[in-house]
Image 1 (cartoon, one colour):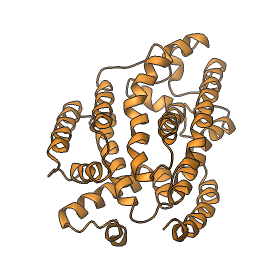
Image 2 (cartoon, helix red, strand yellow):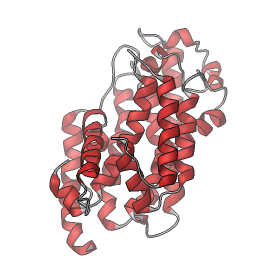
Image 3 (cartoon, one colour):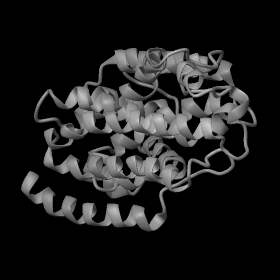
Length: 300
């Protein structure tokens, strides 16, 4: 992490700085869209966002690594983190920054409990009968990430809280739509079985290959559902502190862009990973960066 961000946040302890730096590297390497959006935050807020991302990514990788998944390691990591959070300190190179962030911003412990509960569901749950079942999983795996972020983003109105939950779900459902074949390789399907049945889609239809008419109809249905979540979440952006709005607006536009990218690819997501083009990312992010820099003096 660039030293000036840590300096701006008042983080001076060498071990703590090292932990935040490691979390930033995880964010930069694995969450490029999300990382790009964090650059629109004031420097003093960025380290805390990187810490939350680093924690989530590290835990996720323990169960989602295609080569060497480590479910037992996930359980141990979750138990250790929650114990450290209760103590208020950690020696773990990832957990140290996340515990410090949670304590600094008074983030409820229940959000971290829910996160690790959902991560552990991935050990043996391979599908979800209905959207309600999937939504229960997404609460811990995605909605609480948005809720963890809320204190850092400094809401001006409590109405930002339910919007943050919906935005977390929208982001994750967008990823589920894009990554359906990759998720199946891990033995999981995150699109509700009820929806697969509605369009006559079997799990075998989600393996790499040309998308059938049923798969395309299924993905179009899930895209419409995701867009509803984005519409429900969008009003919350204006309920945040001005210095946070451009970050979330940029993330909102870029993740929502995944849905349009899937449509442009004619729903052919089973043989390749669809992505928002770099030129589009820059077109969205650069004006936001300019606005964010102009907003900081006014916000201060």
